[in-house]
Length: 118
View 1 (cartoon, helix red, strand yellow):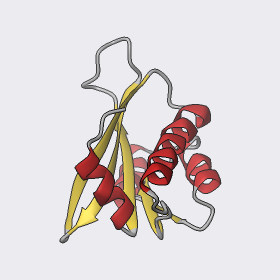
View 2 (view 1 turned 45 degrees about the vertical axis):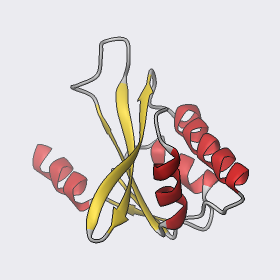
View 3 (view 1 turned 180 degrees about the vertical axis):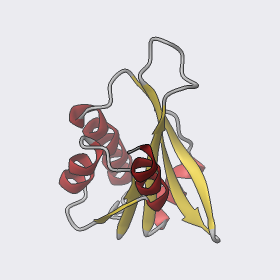
């Protein structure tokens, strides 16, 4: 998991977050590069990069647990109002269990992509 103290401040100061994984650019021993983004001045800014060997509930939960731990160390609350993501079955429950008051919103791009594939 790669992030900086400056990016941590952005994560903890924003109300809305976003997450997505990409698969084609990672070395073969990794499953994906999962990135977390924040909305800042009308733009989507990547702030956390996670190379993962799996894309399952424990993996996503661990990512969010580390972020909660970092927030605790800084004495801030990590509770986004909204989190936008694709419709991945492991990611949504990880968000819901780690951020129970956060509204999960499906990404329109990924929705259209799924519809066009059928």
